[in-house]
Amino acid sequence: MNAIIQAMTERRSVRKFKPDKVPQDILDQIIQAGLYAASGKGRQSAIIVQVTDPGLIAQISHMNCAIGGWQEGFDPFYGAPAMLIVLADRNIPTYVYDGSLVMGNIMLAAHALGVGSCWIHRAKQEFESEEGKSILKQLGIEGDYEGIGHCALGYADGEIPAPAKRFDKRIFTAK
Image (cartoon, rainbow, N blue to C red; front, side, top):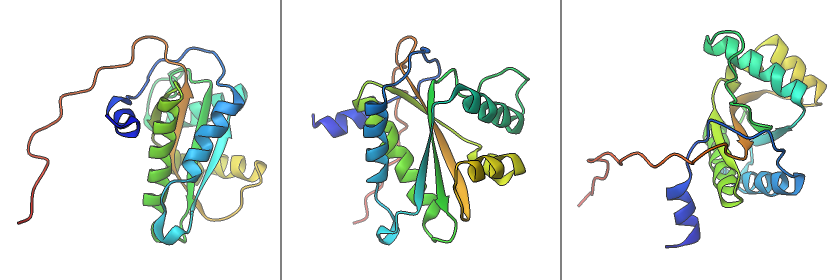
């Protein structure tokens, strides 16, 4: 089987991470793959924010937990030592699709490099909040960006989950 197709069929979300840091050269390769995702009319509306600072990860985790309605202390990032946040320019009509393709590339690249990943939602709500806008401002990010998703990254602590059975009746042929 082709290596890319194999990665697509084998990649699974990881929800328990070891505390080991992901080396910067590996993160750089994952980010590069994200930047090469397809985008509407080649506009490249999505940007990526790399977060490895434990304090900022904790702050974003706390925000995400509150939005998700979990009890205080729950970590919606499952202890991941790194995250990549994908945001996209709302002024581009295809921004949600562009950002989603970036997320897909990030997760496939991570898997190909032996790094576990999990798409974590609620980035939209986080970065619409005053606290989220403040974080972006501190990072020097200006513009009308919407949070598309977070990609929690790290080395899996345990076995990678087996694939779920694929549902029937998902392919239709026009004749």
